Length: 327
Picture 1 (cartoon, rainbow, N blue to C red):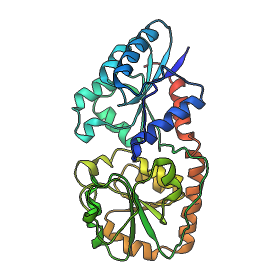
Picture 2 (picture 1 turned 180 degrees about the vertical axis):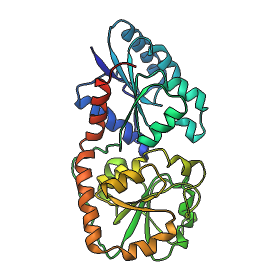
Picture 3 (picture 1 turned 180 degrees about the horizontal axis):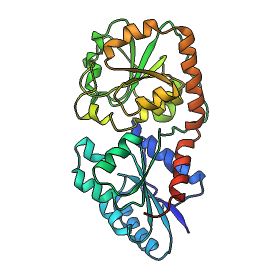
Picture 4 (picture 1 turned 135 degrees about the vertical axis):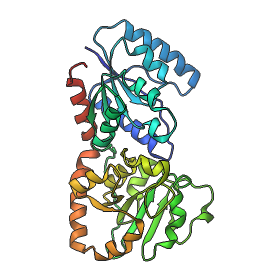
């Protein structure tokens, strides 16, 4: 049996997309899983490569193809589904984000023999919507990095870092209403004048920000409001694993996360941060936190970090998927 990975074309996007997919490519490489082909930087050439790759799979028996979803077009999955065993690693569910109907997404996902889902809440959502594929929980995305030149930590400052697409994170424009908390923001934004009483730290590539992220905590929040995570983006947090969680932990930072986010369970179970209902709770909670408690959080982060910077969560899920019997 030969196992391949559909090696998606990746480039620096200054957000989670490129880093997450690129890391999985490297992790699969480390497991000896060969590329189905080496993708060209030209889209037209990649289409030809896909057609040739489909022919290649049809000529083999008992092959396995690992696909990062939704990094490929649906028609490619349709073409290869009957010619090999398919394992899918989910990055995003377009139906929750409102970019695709639930019926269309489940139809595509049902062509996979095994799916690697973000967490148990996402897995339950898929099953409730009619997904018949076998599902394995990833727990958390890995964040590959060689070492850590951690920025200086000062417990007394209790600075809170947020990294992401600031243009879509409307809540950042309201952070000025939260007093006695020092926010440091990283990411793309069209108009910096919309930010008030926060420190804007610019845009950094994924391999640099992990060593330059300043602050004692990393924030996981989304939507338009500071009182809760609302709207389409806020609701998505109930199901997905934001890659910024992995960034913060790789940077050695305990996290602050919305209590109803799917990753809140991981944070609480591993004691690597604080869960809250509203950002308005931050001043009181940070003021009550003792230096001893903060040190324990950092020690717990260090333990989880040791696994995710080496790709252990992905490796465990992939090995389990490869051992899973056909559906």
